[in-house]
Length: 245
Image 1 (spheres, helix red, strand yellow):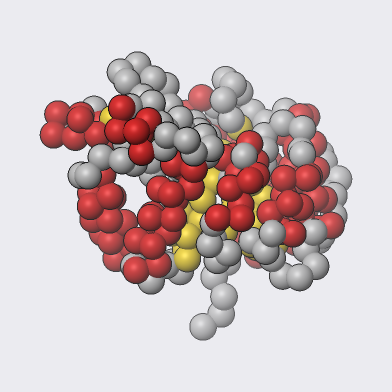
Image 2: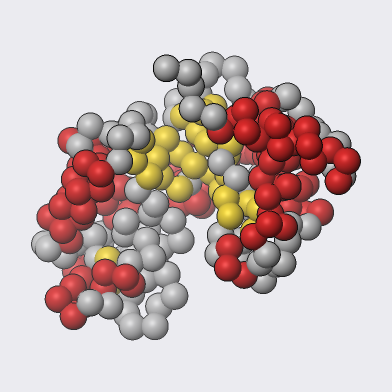
């Protein structure tokens, strides 16, 4: 929102809202079209009503906005990130009106940190880094006063049957980065992402998911290996169990 918007813009009644042109892998829904924001507000209100969580993840990752004539006119003379930031703030207002706290993927603020100063401080930034962890963007968000969530990956863009050593090292490094920045209560935790699970063997990912829960629970690295699976599984069950009462 507006990321990965082809599910909306491929529909005939919304095709005119596309920003980026046909065939654009990460096309956007045009943030400058007069029909866009009313449509997204309807979607946000409907989703917010369906789910009781206090949080609303608005996405907004991996998107290129500003390609259409409307956006070019609107953002003339502005930094490239300005249009994205304006739309993010509009979505934030809609999410707040629905009574939710907004989470957004942080790749755009990692690429254009100058926009941080223009964003509402109650925004929660989900930093997804799936290869070598870059601590500085996370630290920068914390210094600017934002709450953050660290997001490594069990599986991402490549075709992977099961998590490999690089995935485990990615999880370890992200957790270590979050622990070092945890003072002040702005680090909300870790979300281990698992993209396109149909590419791999589902059960092959479960030990890695349990490993993450065990690592977070004991605040440090967990010894990897089949012999540690029962302990990891126990920690996983405890970590995802709902609070008593």
